[in-house]
Figure 1 (tube, rainbow, N blue to C red):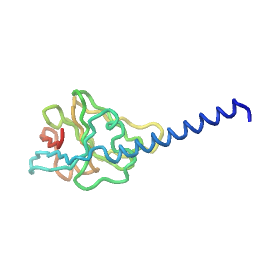
Figure 2 (cartoon, rainbow, N blue to C red):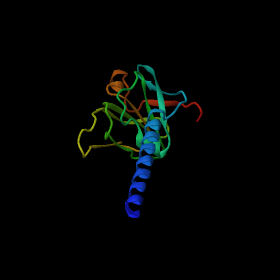
Figure 3 (cartoon, helix red, strand yellow):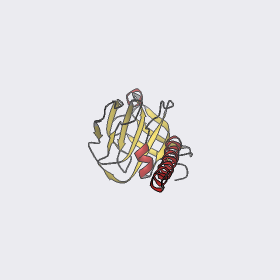
Figure 4 (cartoon, helix red, strand yellow):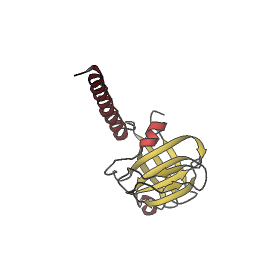
Length: 163
């Protein structure tokens, strides 16, 4: 075997090993976004609604979100924390379960709700943007906001352990 073929195979093996390692790390991160017990409480007209959340507070955690999850426990979700209030945009690429997206501003006021957003099963996915600037987004199982009477103008209180 000549030197060029040997080096070519060597680099292919190295790239394959790093690719598998990167995929394993990303999978681990997607399933353990936060090991701390954090909660969000929505203050609705019918009373408080508490949700146990995983916190996605870095670019990588926000990018992975709930991708490739086959389910979400009842009364649980993911809290996306952004560095600054802005129009926040999400998509459902590689998300396997339908979700509600609850957008809140820096004061915790609910400014938008996207209900029962369906997974994207095509190459091009629809984008879901908040109608007003938001600093926080909570993703829950589809139907959660309607079942719990969460409405625009309601307040959201954060109880983030370790933050």
